[in-house]
Length: 83
Ligand SMILES: [Zn+2]
Image 1 (tube, protein in one colour):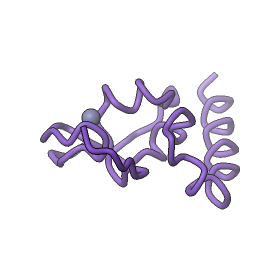
Image 2 (spheres, helix red, strand yellow):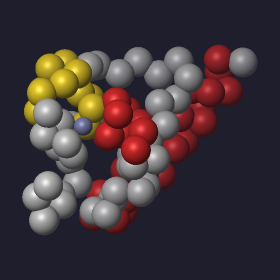
Image 3 (cartoon, protein in one colour):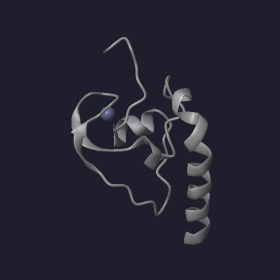
Image 4 (cartoon, helix red, strand yellow):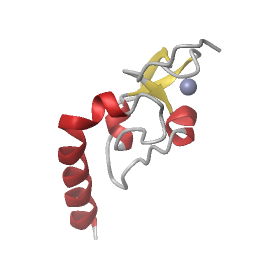
């Protein structure tokens, strides 16, 4: 475990869920083999925003300011369209 955590640019499914990320129903995320920004393993990863970000990640706050509102709005829109 590294002592200094950084908000990841890519995250695997396991870590995203661990940090409170939720994949919106019907959301299409692009997964690709990459080194996960959380666990450091080479796995199928995608961007945290595909999980509506990771609210339980220690460094979540640095990323919160600009994009989270848009992401939540988008997720809500997608969810309502799918009904
Ligand atoms: Zn991971």
